[in-house]
Image (tube, rainbow, N blue to C red):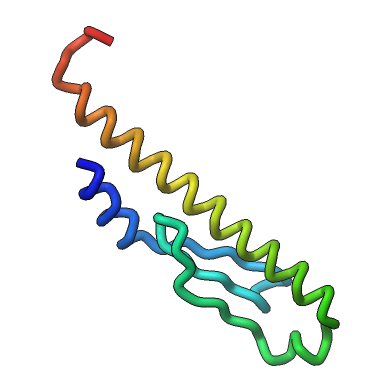
Length: 89
């Protein structure tokens, strides 16, 4: 069952966006980062510290979404497992 959930989470894509889309981090439901996109214009506008801060924001948003998706999938799996047991729980 856990392997099935992992496969489902691998297939789910989540994103974290910062600075109005100038930084986008894409991960899967298992919190594996798939890509990081940074708008070229941001390199001209932001200094190193700003860029690092924005990257953290985008990463954390993506990982938070991955957490939410993972919890939803686990809840669905648990419901499926115990749903057939009637009102025992």
